[in-house]
Amino acid sequence: KYCRQLFDGSIKPSMMKRVQRKRTKGFKLPENTVCVNRGTKWGNPFKVVQSGKVYAVCDTDGNTLMDGFASKTSASAYAVGMYAGWLDHQLSPGGGLDLGDLAGKNLACFCDLETPCHADYLILLTKNKH
Image (cartoon, rainbow, N blue to C red; front, side, top):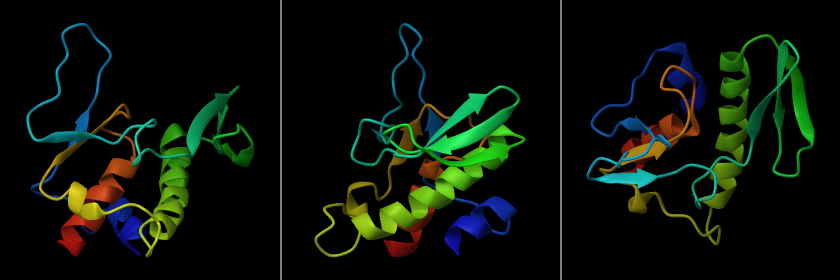
């Protein structure tokens, strides 16, 4: 539900914001920002890859879960949807993740700010839970 509303534009995350992390020399994360990129416990295990003129979504082992996306944006939205299902399981009792760790923080990932990102979903969930 939240994922669809996030990408159809009917709701927008506020207060907390997404920050694009960069690999450039001298880049520093703004204060009050938590990294949620791959390699952290909040990272999206579903990756968008380009193959020729189309895009695919793969799991952490490189297995293609869905391919044939005409744009990176549509593949990214699909990957965020996959992440939403995965995250819901991780947030269940015994799953080991707690959104309270993110409450009131900005979230940083390497995704382009113009493309759907799992950080948007994390912001939305955190705001609705806290």
